[in-house]
Amino acid sequence: MKQDRFFSEIHGNFGFGCMRLPMKNGEVDYAQFCAMADAFLDAGFNYFDTAHGYLGGKSETAIRDCVAKRYDRSRFLLTNKLTDPFFKKQEDIRPFFERQLAWCGVEYFDFYLMHAQDHNNYEKFKRCRAYETALQLRQEGKIRHFGISFHDKAEVLDRILTEHPEVEIVQIQFNYVDYENDAVESRKVYEVCEKHGKPVIVMEPVKGGSLVNLPAQADRILRELNGGYSNAGYALRFAASFPNIAMVLSGMSAMEQMEDNLSAMRDFRPLDETECAAIDQVCEIFRAQNLVPCTGCRYCVDENQCPKNILIPDLFAALNAHETFHNWNTGFYYSEILTSGHGKASECIKCGKCEHVCPQHLPIRDLLQQVAETFEH
Image (cartoon, rainbow, N blue to C red; front, side, top):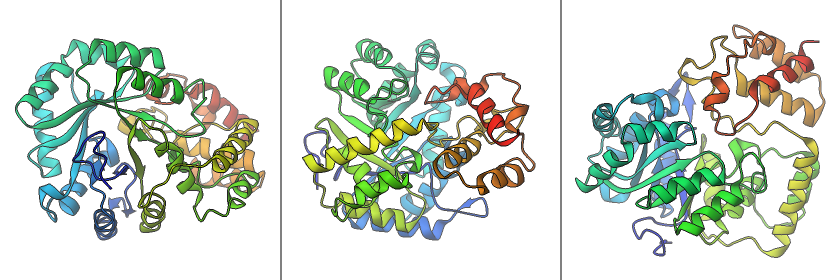
């Protein structure tokens, strides 16, 4: 169960990502989250991941109430992150960090990451000496391990790791659809981590749920394997099959998802040749559909990013559903649900704020025009 090759304190290669927790009436469903955390820890895993922007801060306090208050600190590992919008200068970082400790109900973080590094915000992190501040916190024992999460091209990561060899671990987006995606460059980014000798934490292994509800032809290919794994299980095992992967995170919002993921990762085995060939076929089907590769992270709509209050990820999901299933109800859902009280795709003023924060580097303004042409004309 232990991953001694990377960090001996990490048990197993599966982590609980807390960006998509179970919700009820706009609040985290504590009863279900407690049950999910119990199942996760009882299975022998111990790694939880959060950030202040997740669920508008409710992820951190839910971890405090459902994990930190209920378990001895030795039973779990906790990762948190320093995120761009929450500091403007170096002097802001330490007070924010101390508040994060309080919000999470802990005295230290096992891992602390410079969040969502790309060519834009990296310059701000450098200017504010964020890396140096985090390393000082590590020296004080308030951080056990220091790393980054990353959303950009491989050449940018190569630069960051060259300038900061003190980085211990890198969190990247990695899944079978993005492996050869020219926008995400999962393979190339992973290879940069290997080049610098940095173990990898995987985020978005199921691509925001996109690799669960597969197109019918792709779903049939995986079912015919008769391996006993779900679509999510195959996606998790794909990511975990690479030798430099220390941890695969999954954001789970229901006990059923937890149980399904545990069934794939509790007694983990890498994909075999037949399974790899099936995954290649599924990738070909995705490429042929030309779907919008949105993961639903909601960075584009959180923190009042969109001045027209357009539900950008939801509109992309509706467009993808329309392209996949070609049924009438996606149009109804668009006109009666997604744009009721929210902006229509055609109302985009092309300010570009959404594109600046998009981890997938999507041309959102152009894609919204495509949504408008599909549903409004």
